[in-house]
Image (tube, rainbow, N blue to C red; front, side, top):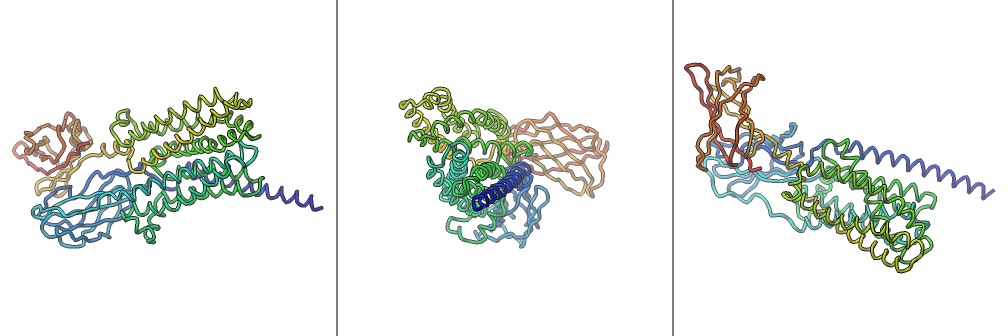
Length: 546
């Protein structure tokens, strides 16, 4: 009677655990594919300001505007006066990619600094400053603190330990449940990695809030820091990551019958956590990038998580070492294939051009990671095709070599974690390319005529200029001819004159145009209204270096 009752209870518990795990897997998969944080191009870049950086105005503007390469959420907006005092700007409006900020007071003569800090939808904060002067320039006030290297170091360490928890901890729990016959070999190591991740996850979230607000480490306990952190997409990464870490611990500490399903759900949680935020997951097209990040994360956890338990099992020459090694060697080939394919897709989307591997910080970190991966794949290949079979057969010396090789793999994996954590501070080349492709534009308004001038891309080199010509009261202006004249006397560049053509959409266009140097250019439009009337309007336009 008791035995039958116990058996029925075990079956019911097993079914409930299975249903729970299936539900968790469905939730994780939905989070990975759809992505809770929403749309984004990742790592916003400032592409336009009003007033423009360095402008000298006759009087203070009633409002400021900042236009970014993607939608952002303002965190801290500050106006620093010429005397060094500052005022918080709390009244603003969001419209697509533009933040319009109300100026609450009349500005005095001298140089002012508009300091801004916003957060991208990928969860990464971005900050900067715009200088402008009223009347005449003065000595610029100090607008921002230098880089807080203590905070950056703490963020980097938090990312490394969170990776250890997710990949070595959750991946290790999966290996013990699915590949090893018992949980003895490497169990303490896996638990230690999981505990490291459980500590690093909430700490990393708090550090995210500090970085978002530009606050020092001393402000970690402030409620506003944590509210800000939870408002970023990284908050979802931490939440899902904590769930994955908890499921992995449950697979080790709970009933044996629930070990496999809980470990599987934890492994899926690793992929979903990584897909919830970050450069790669926020890139377009997200129907491709988020699943690729999910598969990449799951593949890393499977491979890296199995290394330490497997090495310890072989080292101790336990009875489970042979079956463990055999199962791992059979499964690793398709896992590595998926891992490599997902990594290649993400790298192509993020880097875009081979030159970006050398010319950008993100690319150089990727090169270091690729070198480490080359060593890792070389060791793995030797282990799989040279050492595995003799080690399974019980060759003691080969087993020792295999243990040393697996230990080297673990060290390389840790080095890869350290390199990947540096991506937190570097925008990907794809995001830089989006910002560089944005046009430089200016609105020219006079009593006789007005125009919207746009130069695409807005940096030095070959560009296309487009103009929409109107009367001074916003009415249509049927001009006979329009000529664009660009000049930069301070660089010794004489006027560049190019006649515009009319493509048929109501605008005017100049195609054969090269802007030789960046900086502030004078743009003049010579508008032939009739055979006897020529209207000339001009304004300054800023051309970026890249």
